[in-house]
Every structure is written in C-alpha cells, then in structure tokens.
Length: 322
Image 1 (tube, rainbow, N blue to C red):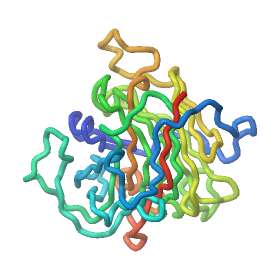
Image 2 (image 1 turned 120 degrees about the vertical axis):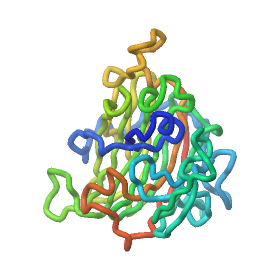
Image 3 (image 1 turned 45 degrees about the vertical axis):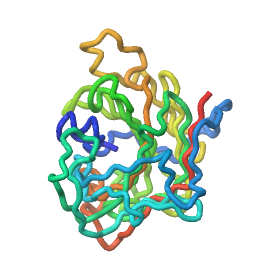
C-alpha cells in the first residue's frame, strides 16, 4: 500500500503511511501468448487454505489500531469476527460503516499508549504473517474476490520483517495486488465514456526517505470487460534475485529488475548488495482500507457509505520456493 510519512519510526513499525496512486504504465489487458504461463519448478512451502472454522493464529496476527494507515484512511483495524472470519473455506475481511474508537497506534509501536485513542467512522481488518511466516524469494499466490464501491481499497502486499536497510521505504515494499473503487466510473485517461473501474495494480516502493521516496509499477485489466469484484482471480508475484514478476491468473503483466530499483541506504553503507532492498526476508499483509489519500481522491471521490459493508474474500494463500 502506498504510504506517506507520519513519522519515520511509526511508518517503520506500522507500515501504515501512504502517498498516492503509483505512476503506472498503460494497463495491460491482453499480454502476448508467450507470457501466459509461470515458470516450472516451484515447490509449495507454506499455505493457508482457510478450511477451518477460524483464522489460524499460527499463521496470522492482527494489527489493531485506528491510525488510518498514516494516509487519512477512515477505518479502525480490529480483531473482531465482524471484521475478519473464515466461513466455507473463505477468509472474509469486512469493512463496515460504524463508529468505532480504538488505539491510535498499533501495540507494537514504541509510541503506543493505551491512553491514546482515536475514533473512525468505519471498521475493517488487517492480517499479517509477521513473526509467523516470512521469506526471501518465492512465488506468492493468492486467490481472491475483491470488493467494489467508492472508497474501497483492498491490498495484498509484503513488507520487510527486519527493516535491514532502515525505515520505509529504504527497506522496500512489494505490492502484489491493490485496487481502488472498483465498479465506479473509471478515471483512466483512455477510458471510454461511463467505463467502469476494473484495474488492479502491482507496485514496488523504494529509494529515498519521504518526501523523495520512489514507486514504480503497472496496472492490469481483465479481458472482456470482466471485473475483479465479480469473481475469484489469482494474483501472484514471482520474486527472485534481481527480478520480480506480476501475474493475474498466470498471465504475466509486469516485470521489474534490480536495475530499476535502489535504496538510498547505499549512500551511507558499503554492505549493500546489487539487489537491495529486495534481498531480505518479507512477510505478507492482507487488508481492506476505506478512503484515504488514494481511494478517496480518485474516480468519484470520497466514500460511498451506502456501498458498505464490503468484503475482501480470499480462497487461499500459497507460497512456493525453488
């Protein structure tokens, strides 16, 4: 998720600050046939099929705060069943229109205080595998059905576990999939009149400390006018030394290489490898935000309260390595 700095320390711990939609290339809609299949040789090393009756606490923890992502988002993240639950083999992350008061900062933020409270007009959930699963390289595959409506902002993404190169974004961020305001009137420059929003985005964040941080990525549209909110689709990256590739239903739509990214930590350190910052262990995050500096400022702008509740539905999360 794109982030803007509240304080360098808070961003490092919470990974909550965001900036603006990425500068993306023209959306891919029909890649060349040669790009249709993923490479062979991947072995399954971690998975959650969500086949039980509850969220597996050995694989996922909850962030609980009303900080708003450092991005003026309008939700409190909770660990309540109303906001995240497993049913019939599907993980549901639900954003609801309800006033809620909770901790201003996540409990693992050193600045956290039980006396610092904040009230927001929506609730939702953010799950993360930090402390329970992290990886250096691999194929990360998630089958999901996305929410729709003005203000909805689902994200499947990754953050560094140890922040080896320093605070965000010196240590990097990998956005496997994000989307905003699906089903609203598209504001894509090439959109037809009354065309509906149906783009998903894959992005990297890196470079210098804010406000000089850098992000790069590409957006993708499903074929035949289909929307990611209508059915389940598979979103994946293949992350190898010096290269990250993005897929939707095994269609390759973006590739970035180490020649495209960097970390400003290299300016003051001599132990930086050629693939930094994407050469350290990262963990997974799954969340549904509401509004904020991106979703609230594009398409039809603001948040359509009548569209809620909305749900990010996830069939499985699988991690492969080779």
